[in-house]
Length: 509
Ligand SMILES: *[C@@H]1O[C@H](CO)[C@@H](O)[C@H](O)[C@H]1NC(C)=O
Ligand SMILES: *[C@@H]1O[C@H](CO)[C@@H](O)[C@H](O)[C@H]1NC(C)=O
Ligand SMILES: *[C@@H]1O[C@H](CO)[C@@H](O)[C@H](O)[C@H]1NC(C)=O
Ligand SMILES: *[C@@H]1O[C@H](CO)[C@@H](O)[C@H](O)[C@H]1NC(C)=O
Image: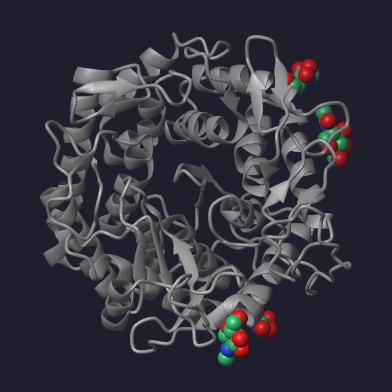
């Protein structure tokens, strides 16, 4: 039985009037950024905001335009949105505009995600957006050879040939929301079937830890490569989509929820570790092979994902741990000179054992003693994950400290990211004058600015009860939530896992 009570998923809190101007601040960041992109880089993938040039790392189809469209629509920037539709209706997506091969993963989350979300948000008024998504997917479908469950990660669009290399579960397992949605609007089940076949194949392999698939996969043999498990890059959005696919489709196949629940359970029981510096970093999740334990900015999506899952499963344990993980990630912003968090960081667990040669430096240990983590890669490339989880924490708890955190990030962006035009990444988040990175990523438009905007927006607008966000923050319309997402009610029983030969990352040794 489906019921549509908002409290099942995420509560509706109105943000107090003193935050009213913050939504406008975010819109200003967006319009300033997009006007500069239009002036200096229109039609290319990214603006280079320092040199006033552009780059085409996403096959030159205008990644920033597609990525920005749903945000334009949500902000009510209709003229920009209409211009974007006009532009895209002329793009030939069957040919790469650059010599590069086409990434199945990146093209799916950015282009398919942006096109299909825009189609839905604008009331299905522009069928050309579906036609363009289909143009891409019909070429990308060549990534599945014969009866292979797993797609190859790259396709040569000029010859329709998949390019073989070792891939990862995020590349193969982060297609299901977009390809399912494409099937819905084309009445062709092939797309949904291809993408869900890949997820189910991965979930059914014997895993290193219950529910936690290994990061590496060989799309030729269909087997794992190595046994490294993580919630960070390479695995992240495979885990994210297990939950979100179950929510978007309300499928009665229990494998998605069961695997997600088991992955979280294993993470809590095996990967979660106490910090040696308890006042600041209580618990963090990270691969257990790493001493000290390293975490990347990308992994910080996990708090928001666990909050969503904790709500859907009505499991307070998961919610409480997610809020602590969220605090740990926010702490990496709160502790730097710019108020922005680094690309990678580490902490020293209670079980850490390292030498002066392989452990942190003295200055890293001093930073750790003060802040509960230390920086291992100091740059910021306009990533969203900490603010993504912060937005979920606000929607779940109604605690205005999360609004204060988002407001503080806006202030830091306005102070430290301005480039010649628009905004740029930072070389060193812990230095006020470390210099800028000459690239404005398309996910700045899609994710950072949308998550910030929604944090200060009326929570019934793009409510988390009504929409599921793809991993690029593009909302897809979901059916009313079920009253239970229990799956089979069981955790996954794992088959014995054999560490593959040549495995340099084995943490089970
Ligand atoms: C559905 O899409 C697949 C993949 O592009 C294609 O091969 C197939 O012909 C399509 N089926 C129909 C009925 O159009
Ligand atoms: C898609 O999968 C469903 C369920 O397995 C199957 O019934 C259907 O025939 C498949 N359709 C296509 C076009 O592959
Ligand atoms: C909630 O999740 C935790 C962590 O996975 C698990 O140990 C516990 O059994 C779950 N509670 C319920 C009621 O399912
Ligand atoms: C720390 O590592 C060293 C070298 O591997 C080992 O000899 C020592 O027993 C370890 N200490 C603890 C407390 O595990």
